[in-house]
Length: 170
Image 1 (cartoon, rainbow, N blue to C red):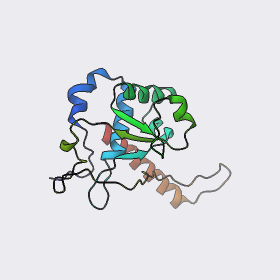
Image 2: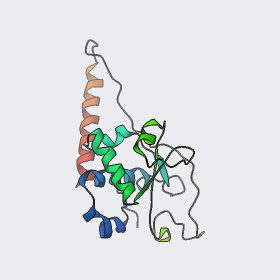
Image 3: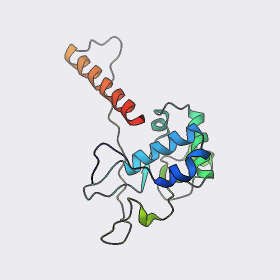
């Protein structure tokens, strides 16, 4: 069965960890899950790790400090792994701050029972690292006159984006 426009969340998160995490850690975790398990390549494989900019976490409504605290809490609970592009460990917040790109991955027990595992080949597939690109609208200066049709399209897209965000959090 395939459910469109959904992201699977590991049951272990709900069964074991949700009661022990702060709200900021839950939001950070769910953003990581969305970026990893919510995207599939042409073969149907999910991402095993992804480069996620700190600003993407802030789009969950958290402050910069709350994002950092949430990431650290998830690291302390051994729910995520944070590395740079060379797979160097970035558990220390100062190392993360200095890294150009920070990659996040989920640490899951019994990976054979997750979406990473391929039943046919009995292995976890290798992955090309592609970033999850977020599309932004072109920016205009206050002095520039924006054509009505472009402004109307911008408003429609912004309203659709906001509605999608609201739909995804319920």
